[in-house]
Image (cartoon, rainbow over all chains, first blue to last red; front, side, top):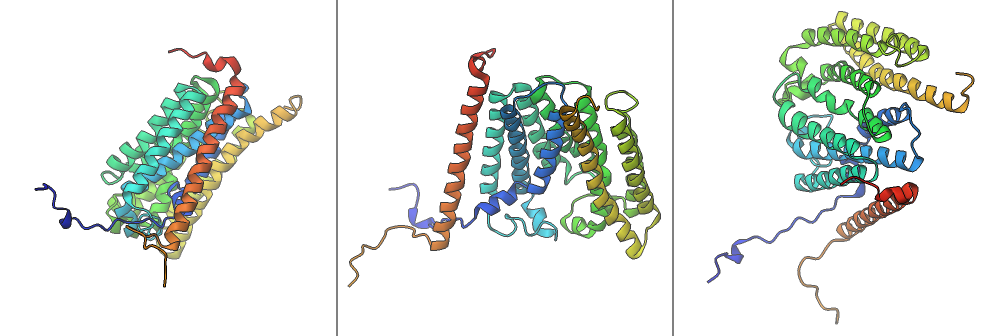
Length: 312
Length: 54
């Protein structure tokens, strides 16, 4: 007699109709593009010559690692995503990809990204990439996100690490400069995400995610946005007087910082109606431009210095 | 009369077959990129590729 009653098992395997586009969506391409850009800056400002093939390998591995983190994050947050307007169209809530498929996809990519970076470039970079993925998936997604309103403050470290990984890939070591880039992204994350959370607080409340506006209210969030923006502007400008980045960067960071502060003050002051919503959206949009422009300045300086060393 | 033998087991729909084919091509391309990457880095590093502390 068979121990398993085969007739009792319903043979209805799920056949996937998921397209390549669904798997690309799991990688969070927009987040990935910001990771690629910040990593590229980390790699380019490193004071060593990196062979283009090795540079491409490093950026590719960091990008794939970021994509893997995105896929694992979606696999673990399918229930939350289904409840939020912003994320309800993701492949898992739409039923295009199962949680298990996303997990397998993310784990495979993470494994290959870390191993390839370690083997082909160096193990400091490989180890840091592994730590970044671990921090984003385990510390942020599994532990902090559903537990504390400080989720994106601490979790922001994962998003801030790519330029550090890239610097390590280029130099095989770590020094102050990549950690300055880390600090800029780290302090940029709270005002950026809390601005988003302010105009999406209904979404977060419905999903039970303890974002700051849901837990502490919009006014407390506005104050936190302002305080973090002040720290951000100071941290972003500090490398200039400290002698790590030059005056072009310093002045740019001050001009951009003035814009960031003005918009944060506006968010703090306008608390009711359409004006408040507009102020929050404006800060959210500008914060993306702020980070991009700040890093683009560093990149541009490197390019100009390489093309016309006598001018600089 | 149709002489074609009836297939056993699960029969994929056309949409399932197409999406599976596209996924297979994507996996093949990704593996191809990986092979080219390892080859290119080996060429770039030259003999130094073997030079790694254990």
